[in-house]
Length: 320
Image (cartoon, rainbow, N blue to C red):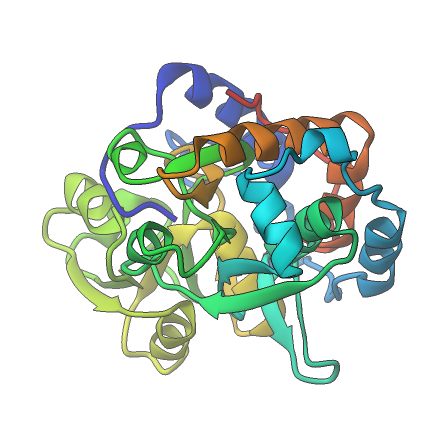
């Protein structure tokens, strides 16, 4: 989820595009006018209700081998986290498929949540995490003040943000999409939002994208994804624009909503880290390469995002 209208760097964009297309299994692109059927879209009319496979995630975490002592030298950021015994994670409890609180178990489940637990297991030897809720407007401040060790929160890498934080990754790719109430007509692309009331999260780049395609759109901002979903469901807006994976999660838990065909950007997600800890970026990137190479990343995708998006796991984006 972007908070700056910076365009991801070219090398990332190419890798991101390939991963995004595979991940969402769409036949259309940003240039389409909605010719692809909604059956191919996460949250579309043919989407099957599905739940995150928590037992598969637990098994993956149990199998994760902790880092060798040589990989965590004394005085390093990872060593400090290991000594503390808990990885403090900036995240959310409201993003279905990525990081959502399951009220029946009290656990936060999803792709981001699983990856953070795997990283904790790798550092500490057990998946001990402490979640600090973040928003698009608070992530950088929490990293700078060291109130969190890492941010796993659909955090798009941009050149502007890289002035403020370190990013490990990218470890996932998404793209902006449009969500509407089922039965909505007259909206097939960003250009069709002209004159419509459109909602998104505050601090994102979405208003700029909307205004570029539909200058007369009326944009309303909300702090959280939950507030956006409520506004759309309550007919206080015509459409919701944000990252497709988040919108797909909304459709999973809100059957009255659907995601339209087409994505309108490439959003490479990174793990946000403090600028003060360059050693930790190298450490986390090495771990990411390991879980991608041994198939763990693909299994996490299949147990989370893959419960809603059909097809095989996509190829992870290239880590810089």
